[in-house]
Amino acid sequence: MRSTSLDWNRTLAIAERTAERPPAGTQAVRNPYSSLPNWLYPTFVVVALGAFLVYATWVVFFERNGEYSPYLSPFFSPLIKVASIPPAIWVAWAPLAFRLTCYYYRKAYFRSFLWHPRSCAVPEPQRGRHRGETAFPWILNNFHRFAFYVTFVQVAFLLYDAILAFDFAGRFGVGVGTVLMAVNVVLLSSYTFGCHAVRHLAGGELDCFSCSRVARARWRLWRGVTVLNVKHDRWAWASLASVWLTDLYIRGLVHGWFTDFRWVS
Ligand code: FES
Image 1 (cartoon, protein in one colour):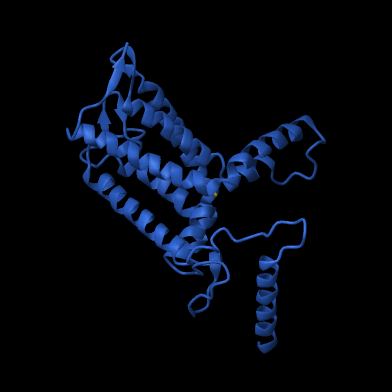
Image 2 (cartoon, protein in one colour):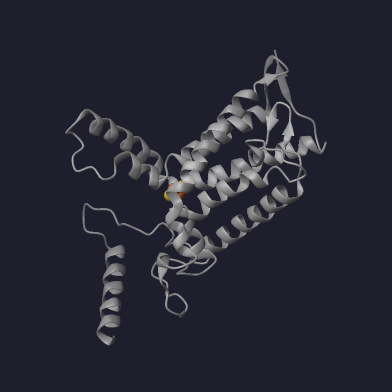
């Protein structure tokens, strides 16, 4: 144990020296969070995700209407009405499962809510035997790919809704809601199709990318997915914000808090 901690201290000392004086002609590689206090990122995640979860819970369980023609809230799409059950209940579980099992969100909530650990090179609190994703509940994270299949279908519905949002009783038009719904579906698609599981579906388990026409097509697809995957965390936050804002706007119309600004031909 003692030699391990000595090695660790030596490694840290070398890393610090290297960061201070990068070799001539090279750039120092820095942890993007290293210049910020290491509590800042976890605090941001707790506040932002916590606030969204409170809002989403209120909408899903206590709001009955997410429709203001021609707009439909993303929490209510596809619209399923069964007796007096709140319609969003039939829908919300899919994006929830998708985001909870997302590789990026796992990092975010493990660091922020569980301090496991809260930042790079920061010791975490002592805890019992941790079995990672081999035991309940974290083993459920292994179902991420299946959550993607369901979310894929939902994104298709959102695209359809965004197209319908240009139809104002048979006349072409654009309202603030149309713009929000269109932007939302673009951001959600970028998040969904930049998923690590999609990247694997596109190019995984191939030994040779150039050996057949199908393999070459999969390579091109893999490269496209990788472009989105590189900024997966940004797409995750941007799409979360757009879902929130789109619902908030439509909710404001439903409750009469303001009127829709629109241009109709
Ligand atoms: Fe984030 Fe799949 S890894 S959505």
